[in-house]
Structure formats: C-alpha cells, structure tokens
Image 1: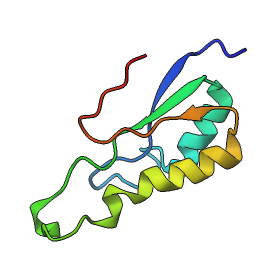
Image 2: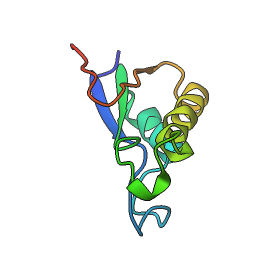
Image 3: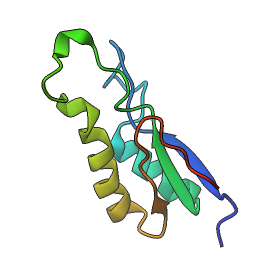
Image 4: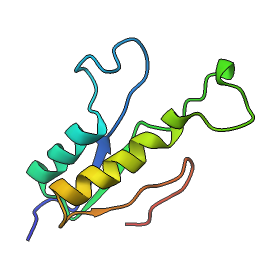
Length: 94
C-alpha cells in the first residue's frame, strides 16, 4: 500500500531553461512517480501559458503533447499509479 496519496508532478516548464535539465519532462516525471509510488498523480505546469505569437486559430502542440506523453510514459513506467489529467481551471475533489 502506498504511503503517498497524491503527487502533483510538474511535467513541463517554460522559458530558456526548458530542456536543459532544470525542468522535469514527461519521461522524468513518470520516473518520479515510479519512485514515489503515490496512489494518484496529477501532472502540473503544462498547457496553461499560451504566448500571443502562437496565434489563436488552433492550440500549439506544446499545450497538449506533454500530458499525452506523460500518460504514455506513466502507463509504461508506473502502471499501478492512477493518473488524473486536469484541464486548466478544473478541480479535483480528493
């Protein structure tokens, strides 16, 4: 039985340090939940910052891909952990 009920896991970041090892990426976040073994994990820090220069006609991939990749990686790496992906502004009663 896990000792940790809920883990809020950052799966992305923003800015010039993104990809430089200063932020967890989806694979690193999946590895973190494998080590932590929470009952439930909620990915955070992705998909909410939309720069104006990316247009308004369709969502850029970086707003959806991190969560999709995290779901795939978590299913492979930590299949016993329940993952709940929340939309921006959505709430989780726990």
